[in-house]
Length: 381
Image (cartoon, rainbow, N blue to C red; front, top):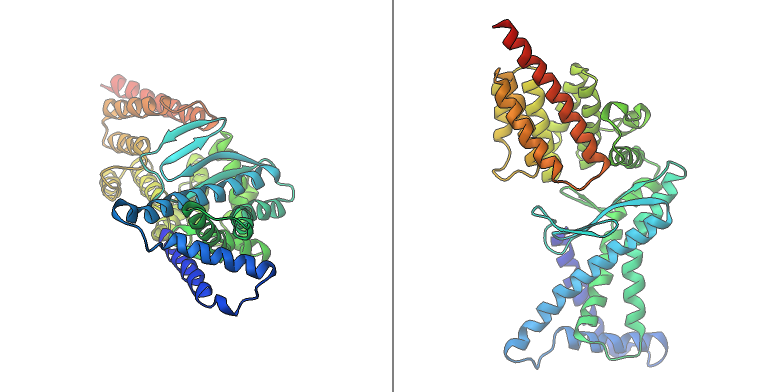
């Protein structure tokens, strides 16, 4: 995504330069003249020829500042449109900075690369979800174009920052309207196209929005809507949505102790994990490790799956759970309980939320099972 954005920015700048070169054929009055005047001023600001010393760095510095500003405007557009369309904000992330309501700011060690952003929102209900999702999706590109284009037509002398912001904001808005997928990133335009086509992929994404809303509110996995689970898993393709949908369905089957179904869903997650982002991919490997250790009693296979994780895991708490499951499979109940204590300590450091409480309940349930196993072992000896 960041590569496409950089390419788009320079293509837009090149287009600006080309229009400036050919500006002699433009009319000398009306909006065309105003736009030509902006192009002449902008290209002179973006690529000045009279800079000396440290000033040579200014275009690069202001271009990055403008890029962050354009991304922030884009995410703010999603946020405002989403709130208007009855979506609830989970968080906004810009690079490594994550903001959660009401206004909790956190520096994330596993932030987004470069000047990229993401707005996580969930629907408060299922009424007219398709239309509301379209409004939320259009909000980001619309914000970029609405803030940039009027600036371009203002009859004023644009600063270096303003000139870069106009070019980059237009590029961000237009690029996000293009239907494309790059690795684990699906553009706004691709989502919009899915929904307008009324495709099964669009239905899947709407179901995922609903399931995500339930999970964020602390709904236990086994209580997730079977209807939405069925819609979300009806499509299997090489996409992050396939991995997300089958991960949720796997959690439901796992909690219900439907091991054959859980194994089938987990296999689909692993089969398509290559097209998912690092977080989804790691979650699939950790799920595989826990499943092999707890349900198959194959500590050796579980250790192989954990070996696939990077040294610095994105989910250290889940990794502890997997290590505890391996120790349990090896018969080391005290060691498993120690891992559980470490995992619980990490969860307690999280801010209060329904998801946090659900995690604590799951750990308490596991603790009770381990303690019962430990007691039976003591009695047997």
